[in-house]
Length: 141
Image 1 (cartoon, one colour):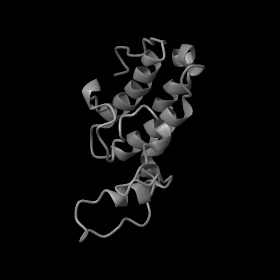
Image 2: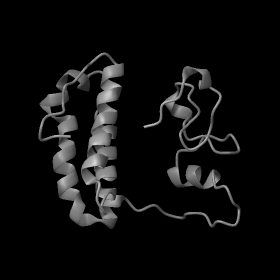
Image 3: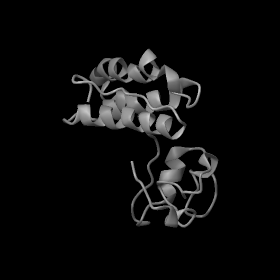
Image 4: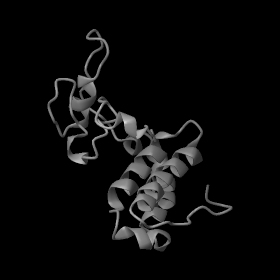
C-alpha cells in the first residue's frame, strides 16, 4: 500500500494511479489513454523502449498451483462473518481475488506477510467506509 500526502492529490500518475479519487481512470497509460487491459497499461509505463512488451499475464495461482488451496482458505476471511459489517459498504470480491493472487504469488517465503497485507488492504477500505473490523488474532497476522 502506498500512502501519499493530500498535497499530491491529482499531481501524480503511473502504475499506482493518479490519486484523484476516481477508480475508473486508474489504468491511464503514459499517453493519457484509459485502458482496461492491465498488460497494455503496464507496458505503457516501461522506462526503456528496448524492453520488450509483456504479451500475456499468467495468474500466480496458475503458475504456482500448489499455493491455490492455502491462499483460498486463508483469504476466505474477507468474505466471512468476520467482515460482515463491511460487506455492504465495500464489495469484498475484488479484495478476495487480489488476496488469493497475491498470496499465491508469494511462493518463496513471506506468504503470511502477503496474505496479511492483502487482508489489511480490505480492512483499511472498510475502515475508510466507516466499518472498523477487528480481524487480527494471535493466529491470524
